[in-house]
Length: 197
Ligand code: DGI
Ligand code: FE
Ligand code: FE
Image (cartoon, rainbow, N blue to C red):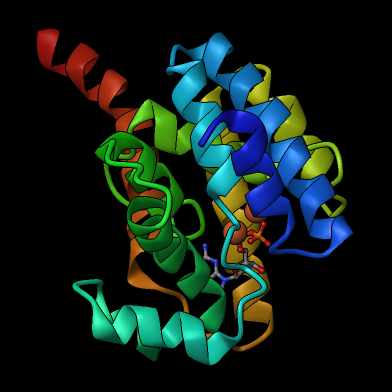
């Protein structure tokens, strides 16, 4: 299957609005990959497929998780987390994507996780700041993305965590771990300086 056919396959799974979002994520992810040193070809492929299952019936997404070797604890958290893991599974089984780096970028694009690769960060951030996104604080995240991928991503997670708190919703532990890890990595520089004195 070539890129054009893959694009059509993805497009057929979602309403036009979500397809426009996906196009935005593709462009932004490739741009960020070039800027911050991730593989633009992998960013392109991960972005194309990242929301493939987003509009599938929620029972179908749950079934994919429960019937395969995927993290079962997802089912105890918000259903918005499910499409990314289901999507990675389908990318592998239906489209033959066997590059774990690409699959992880799809898998963790919603929750994030500790020690994210550059590719994972790029896809996750692109999902936050693609041109069609319009939520309070998005311009600040776009601004930060011109300076620091990590700071922008922290601001993104802050927004999501704040939103989930305001709604009285559960927060998946990997999202907290992702944010903590990015904050610690940012501070690690200072620690090294102190140790040298
Ligand atoms: O699929 P998209 O809408 O493009 O974006 P996404 O895959 O990042 O999903 C974002 C939604 O997921 C957002 O509305 C918040 C919701 N969500 C629910 N629980 C969690 C969560 N997001 C994170 N990061 N962590 C959660 O525990
Ligand atoms: Fe998504
Ligand atoms: Fe998305």
